[in-house]
Length: 460
Image 1 (cartoon, one colour):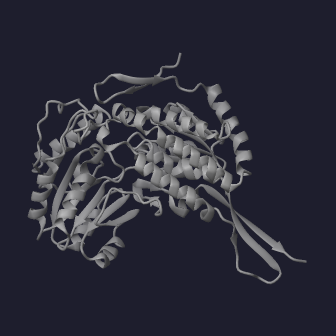
Image 2 (cartoon, rainbow, N blue to C red):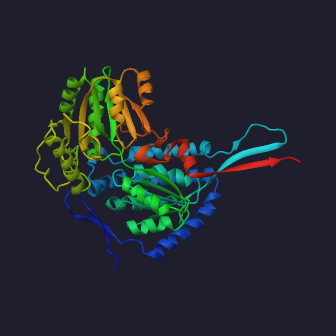
């Protein structure tokens, strides 16, 4: 019998849940069901789709009281933050409301003797491969608009957060989605790649590592499936001399350490103008000391464990390497739970860092951040661009014109000013360089989940 997929809880190392992977015959049946369901769904009116998908979202939100402790057990997020309900609702309802505009027939300007228009049709069967760090927020980015656009969706969730996939499936069933239109499958890497390479998948949306993205591209080669890939990140922030420091400190501590630093657009490196450097570092240290480590089931805990002990050890190794290279640790919060091999890792701030250190160049995806002093805007931009990644970058300044000017020089998918670590569903979510390709949410997200079709009629 095939080995089960187990959720090893970061809270105590216990097996929280385990599931049997889908057998080859089950995978084949899922593809057949998706094909059948999507044909009828594509002919369903948009108002009717809106009604059903809204019910699906409502059903998912009603599960939140149960989802919150499940998230703590599965990936370690403290219950005090209430799960992902707010973001899920904001993104879902926005994309549902946007569908009428984004999917509307485009009538071209009049041309004598001709009628011309462009429509958007569903791609077919989508596969969503969702990550564990924000198991609901990342998934709704493509599931909701994908269904609204008329596609069938097969969800393969991360093994660490399998129960999130089951929650989506239960919500779909509760809302009365046609059978087979949305399906949640438990799959290993080999079966996932085989399904992608089968030619039965028309679009793949993957959030995960750079290496994972390369494997997805390789699996899809020759199938002509479209891809949406959100991969690694090393998001920078630049605090200018004219920044409101209290606001910058508060938000950058949160942006660095929320979710134990396991955020796609979390801040991993900070550059501060030399004239405000000392004051900023002092304020950052004072604020960060309030970010206490503990059991995520305790309502007082702000920082829970990372998803796995190996992830925490990677951050420990980066930090130790930086210290050996001359960096200084400023928090160094000792905790009985924080020890080698443990997923529990206290936040850390490093100064005296440079771009020869992996902590400033390679993705950490944990609660550590390095701060460097810079002389001017030019140096800051150079350092911000010195990375193989480009998801978001934040500029902290009282001069939004300067932020616009500097933002144009930064290779990134999103430029923030005076905020960070946030996704606005009205704006496309995209990245450059090794961060990936494609874009989710906004009207552009709908364009990436549909196929344009032209109508060129001549009157005779």
